[in-house]
Image 1 (cartoon, rainbow, N blue to C red):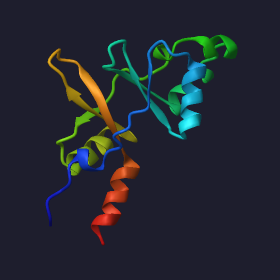
Image 2: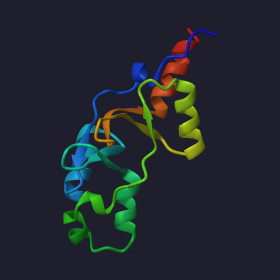
Image 3: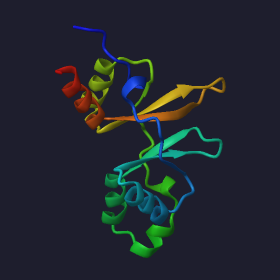
Length: 138
């Protein structure tokens, strides 16, 4: 078998994100506008704070909150804080294992900066990996 590509070679480098104080309404609008299933949520300086997915949006609604009031609350109240991440230099086998073991659909690709925080630089989805598998067969 040939050398496995790295996450950095097949990830989506364009991170579509919002800030923790973005309203739930604006976050849902971003999901729809970009036709994606999740947003990377960042803090003030731009480091990773969480992920907001369609599942999080539905959970916000299903928890019996008043719809209009919930729509104006910050997305930080509804996002997933525990984010599984990977680095661009990881091989795709390691990334696939992370996705499978954690039963998730995407990994936020990060780089660590001198301050010890992680900064999102891309997203790697199950779809990206499956697409790459299909190309490996050619």
